[in-house]
Image (tube, rainbow over all chains, first blue to last red; front, side, top):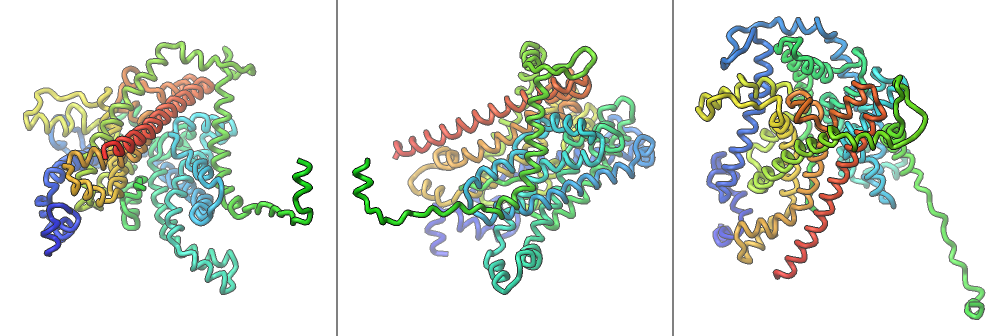
Length: 301
Length: 310
């Protein structure tokens, strides 16, 4: 305590840490009072609007009609069964999962060995390898999507689920590598060496030692990649030229652009179905991962 | 030369250069991922470059001869030049806004956020929902009779509802909702990586809070800010679903991605559409290169300035 009082004018770390253990409202008494206030005001405003944004869609999908009132005057549920007049909902859901799981599965299989090399080996041209592998993440999908879709369509894969999966592998693979690499780095190399020294072969070492230890990383990368792929619009839109290869997000976009034809509640119902699909996965994901892993976090050197 | 080699002892053992070990493991392990990048990313690029040098004949078939006609057509067409301007008008303001807003917020919260997990989970909500859903939800929420306008009217801030969708502002809001959490979390991650000792040292040497921020924190933040800016700008530059749904795709938000899509898919002119997509990629590359160049120059002048100041 004595050292704290001496340095309290200068160093913020000690004091803030001790204050942080107090009651939650203590943040108001911190030395960065105005900073905190500004922060919580802006973030609060942002978050409230996001929650309201999502809530309007849900409410609208149950509305008989909704004009100029805070809530709709009458609630109905028939918009959901009505969806099947326009879409084969089973097919859409199936396609969405096949594409997301297919692209993620292949990306994991392909990305794991590459991530292993990046995490464990030192070699010349490592920087170059890393740059080449990360290239598809740095260039937005629309720039390479149009030539890629044209190529796939020319190859006869346009409008097929295989084509859609192939297109979605491109941004998913570097994403998976990026998440897996630190997980593999964390596993102590001594464990692998010990296993090899005890007579286990390469494959056995991989299966019995490395894989179980990296499984949380695989799970993290897998769930995040699935969530990302479901929301990824452009590539699927460019390649899925037929109705049979549509996924939820492209169908939703199609409905929204043809808004004049449909009741907006019908589009909202579609949006809710899409949202439930993603959100259920996100909630599962949040049990396993830190939310920040959805975003690439930069580290200061 | 001859005398020199004779002067050297003939018996000196020749240094045997070991044949370079071929790192089979590295090659084998990275091969599948490289194959994906080459087959589905670099190949399409080369294919697209080739395709963009062809033109269509009157029947819509791709002609054999190569020329740069698609590119000259693009740069001679005033409406296409306008799309470049519009794309910048859409992408730049919101990117700058995201960065400028994120900096002080991340600075205020550099020592950790209360309810961090909860707040981040809510922040990443729009990222996980995707552009299409956010745009679709905005049509209702920010519409003339939506909750946002209703609330502002109820408070008495405005009399008539604001026009927040189907225009330039709509696209900006959509991009802000998508991009702000991204930029904020990136900059926050970078900011919390800066050692608090530097800040302490600066304060101990007598610098005020403002001076500490500008002379110590900001120069250290520049690399992170530049990268966050680039990544967000690149995403905003190729905005597509938001520009179609909450913008004016035929007027003020006819961005390059819409032009490329329409040429390739609606007019069935894939060579021209590909050319526009590649021009879009080229311009974006130039902007990123410029920002990274400025970053290296500013970082150098910052370190020089610090040297002189001391």
